[in-house]
Length: 582
Image (cartoon, rainbow, N blue to C red; front, side, top):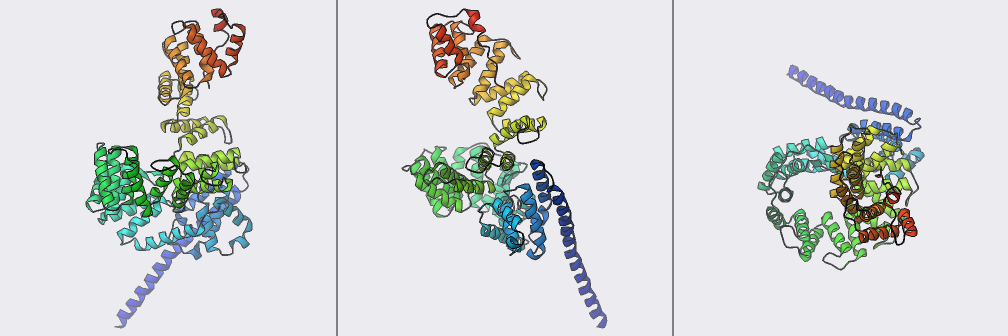
């Protein structure tokens, strides 16, 4: 009996020691991380190059991410963590993560503002009028879900959503995927559906995941068979876009309709979209609005936004900017970043609301903090130019970089330009080329033209006329006038292609019709002297007058000197020698 008692006592003691050791290990790791981070931040604070300072501080903040994302870490033990995180956030000028850090540092340090007034002021300015209560509620929700997620597949699925779509700092895509896999293995349909949608689209939040359409369709079908309405919608999207299955718009309509029958607000939104566009169904504004309003009445923020857009465009209703703004506000208050973006634009233009620069900045910032890349690009332009805000180039470049990293094509192009010229960043042709290629791949025609110029001239890349021509033609397909002019010049001079004056003339004229006033005089010359075209004095004079109307000095001078008669060919030919735009 005594032996059993001693054995039991020893077991309890050993368990306690193991428990203390298990608790002590993370505490030691946290203390070591904070000590290292503090030393790094002390050194970073002395850096005079703002871009370098922000980058290094952002790296420190990233190193703290495992601790910040540790939902089991008690607030009492996290006091130093959030102080160091606040300092790193301010040095990094990290507006996206500032709301979470500000909310938590105020939460764990009730006297934070009094004890650290300068740091508190800086972090609060970065957080920019953010709803701290909402942020704390999200953190609390994540903690509660993590406690239930060991055995509850519904909690696992909700936790996965929080991990994937929360603020940048909290975002944990791999953790989200792992939780969803566990829930799907427990045969929970909603988890299988969400996992399937991610594999099909290759997206989770704003982070790219390697797509696997076949697995995605299999998981979606599993979820549909389990009765998940959202999976019906995502399977419908797969058929609509031909992702993992043969494109079938009729099948998409069928799936969205089934989802609507199950009172899926997502199905209502998607089916409404088809009625708006007339895809697979006859275009019907009334039906589209009816579906969106039905979903809006069930508090779907995307549907609320759609109704707002309908009032803005006058789609199926009388155009009403004030009502549109009201609907945007409702969706924005529910956390919809696109609604926030539209609301910001309304405050910029004064459409439906009183024009207000502060509220414009507030809602663009909120939208960007929620991951909207267009809002990030707008903020970049505002801060760099000083438009509606105090000029802050460093902050503008931070937003430009974030917009580019989030996949906004124009931001990618502008970042490429910045690195090419060394404007507001250290000049770096390799980084510039990287962003130009990313922008061109995302469909930005200006980037296509710049890349084509580089390949044509062999600047920073191996010269390739074939690649240059291919890029120019891609840009031309989307109506880029500079590409038209540059490829025309190549045909005219026989550079990289066989000389072809007619092909050159056709492309010059196409560019002129596309609004390129700088080649109207060139087109006039080609018609007047039969270069590339049959000689046509009437057309030549027409283009000459259009060039004059556009303010072309060469055309004005020509008509002054020769109102009735023509110059000689040589006089005209050498008066203006056009070169492509760089």
